[in-house]
Image 1 (cartoon, rainbow, N blue to C red):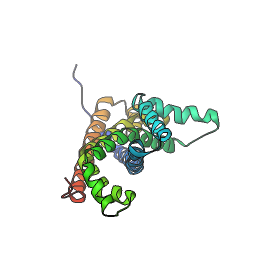
Image 2 (cartoon, one colour; image 1 turned 45 degrees about the vertical axis):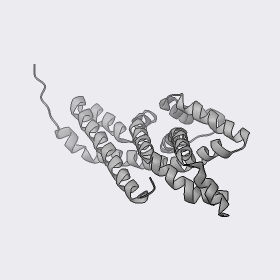
Image 3 (cartoon, helix red, strand yellow; image 1 turned 90 degrees about the horizontal axis):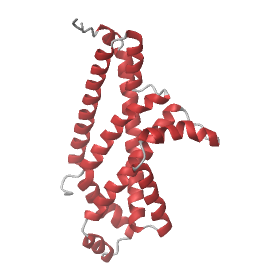
Image 4 (cartoon, rainbow, N blue to C red; image 1 turned 180 degrees about the horizontal axis):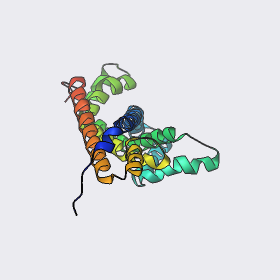
Amino acid sequence: MTYEFDFTAISNNAGLLLKGAGLTLLLATIAATIGVGLSIGGAATILWGHRWARRVVQTYVELIRNTPFIVQLFFIFFGLPSLGVKTPAVTAAALAMTINLTAYGIEIVRAGIQSVSPGQREAGMALGIGPISVFVLVVLPQAIATVYPALVSQIVITMLESAVVSQIAVTDLTHAADLIQSRTYRAFETYFVVAVMYLGMALAVRWAMNRAGRRLFAGKV
């Protein structure tokens, strides 16, 4: 018995797949934009914040990094409504992805900040520049440039992990694949095409962000 490959059903549903891919990229963009910003604030808090603030951030980082993403997603979408906090599926997915990425991003950014020579911060302070300005203008650009590849990798990982948001009926790429497979019963063709699409998206995001990084951080490292 030989299996006859038929991609006709997939081509007939190309629009559904592209729409799902677009939502996956949108969720990843939201998580990356907000998550990196929060990561910078969290890393600065761990390094220079008050003791109670440091403990709060450190506890958050350990909690998120040591629990599965899908559990975090289910807690937000299914658990919080028990406390009266209801969120639409897409909002819950974006929130879970942002929370997850931020926890990993804090540690990445913290490592980058610590890699910058303390003498540069001290020199800026000696010139009369305020501590916040020294951090934003001197320390942070070098820190981000140093860990930028790691941040890019974490963003790509978060995008790929977003496949589980289909479990709460978010119409992302995986949800589109599940829907097509249930209609056509062409599991091999469907998930083969979707795997290729995820691969293409991951490579494209990594290439675009690396290219942007080379322009943004030229001469910083």
